[in-house]
Image (cartoon, rainbow, N blue to C red; front, side, top):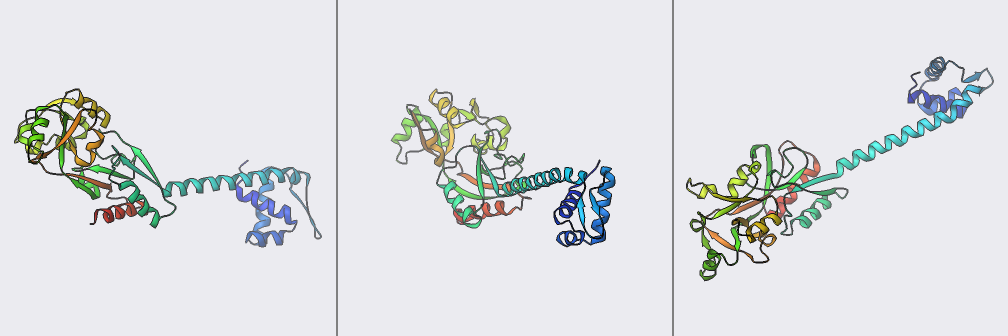
Length: 302
């Protein structure tokens, strides 16, 4: 038996009206077409559903048996359709925002406010992504939008708005000789050349060009860095610096995540500033993605 929802809908309409002409009008079909569909359903079920004569239409015993089940099936189909629509609408209104660490700087509330001003039904959802993924979930589609540090591997696949451009500091133990030297410096800073022989903490190798950037390979004149350890979170970084395993470059806005309990940060002369961006896949033209990028450009003043 292969009964479709349309067959049951036609049957219920006739059963409730007990008149083929009125039922056809309610269904916006012709009366002959409705009669034909009911006969087809009766053949499929192997039973007459209606007594028909010139004066009236009545349900047969089989018709009366079928009616409550037909109504239940149609109600279930309506509920299923509603559930699918709700899930679809929720998916359309959800924006998954990836980040390796909280961007801070007041960015999340500022961008959220601008997004909701344009799309009140939007549901921004934050997702923490491992430091080994420099795209913060964009590359594998886990996130719709992301806070990323530049340079971004495969940069031509993405579009972005820079939301913070900040000097890079070095985090190191407070009793480190370079920290003591910086305290005596008029600018409270150290030269990058003075850091060249220090063991550095590095991002996981999967981070690629971003690992190289935070090791400042471009400023080393071809000299390979000494790697004191690999870190994959702000907490790991703090513990490794505090334990003396190495020093680490950090954007000044992220320094508070690491500088506590004996770990300090000082400005570094001779290296380019860091750039934090909001990025999306270049081929993603969904309205919420475009709106979040537009909000990022507003915040950055682009």
